[in-house]
Length: 357
Image (cartoon, rainbow, N blue to C red):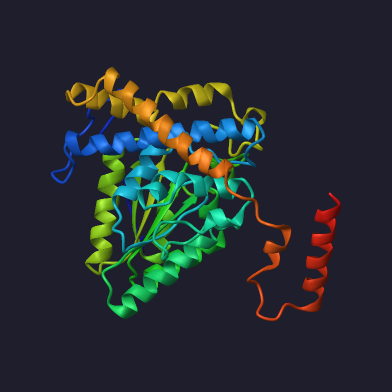
């Protein structure tokens, strides 16, 4: 018997859950001093996340998608990109987007039901959020094709969840990236659950990283709770993309420590023991332990920074709460140069309804 093909998926991990190194850091790894600002960014994201949930619970925000537990993955992705690169995120990568200039008040505005929040202050070549799962992957592949045709030194990075990795949009993007050797990176944020569907029930693949193999992309699985592993995985993929070696699929192994959104109750389908075990792999705890051991972080610094983060987020919350609500007819504007008759009728009906309310 002959073998037509065989493969292995490399797994990257450097920092264990207890904050000690389980493997030698690569030569390109940042120093403790360089990691420190990224840890501060992770603390900012966690502070924002907690306050956003509190806003929703008090009726001041609509449904909100928490990112608790994803901080290392999101910040590592954001730190690995250049301003001229393109980011096509899902609706949960706040850490990466904040690093690219998106304002927290815009995120709040979006989840507060105002579409102006999706007109981000970050690079205008980055994409807004797509509600249909994984459609952003195709947008990233198209951008990567444009970069190659123009000879531009730019990379398109996109994110989807473990559930989104089973969508045809993801497969189509991967296939295009492989066929044309595009500067494209598909980040699969494997947090264990596609809303209420466990990862084992929505795909038979042994890893999600291997989904890129059929398209001819380089595939890697990374401990998404280990910032060093995230940075190294992204560094390799960026280097391949910029040197013309083609795209990559990176599966980041993390966990969704909160419900899918504030409209969800994960206790209905997820075992408490599983969540408790996941907290032992918390990305914040392990990195804090390592930084403390390196002598560059202590409890006093953290207390001061958390307080500062709270103040920074409060400024953004106040800006969101003070933003003027658009008139109801605004939802009909900028859709057509010459609106069809039925749309004009709907617009008039909406205005009349608002006046009566």
